[in-house]
Image (tube, rainbow, N blue to C red):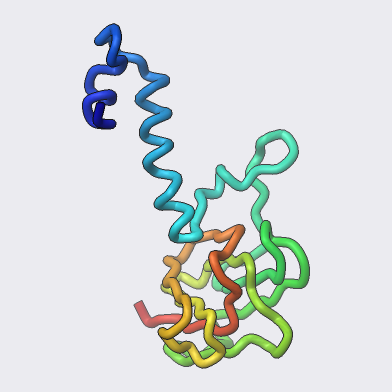
Length: 145
């Protein structure tokens, strides 16, 4: 039976609508997309008590952490002091495994130290928080818009 039919009828056996089933099917369909992009809603990053825990990153900044879940050493780049549309290479020995974009502009993070498109790369909109990257970021570009 298709997911569309289950969502419409709720239950294949009874034909009654079941909101729990609808929510489960929608969640099951949405999660793989979020995981592929490496972007998880802030509410999904939870520790003690189920409250969201995000890394400390101020307005106008791009913040990168060396470990998942916004832990380990952190590098911060302010929009006012970072060249726009230029490849910014992270210091030797540092790779970003979690990041937050609060620059007000889109930011592309690259697996390549040369901002090459032969490795992995993803563009993250301003306001995005990525607790677990799909790859280790070694360079980035902040875009005009």
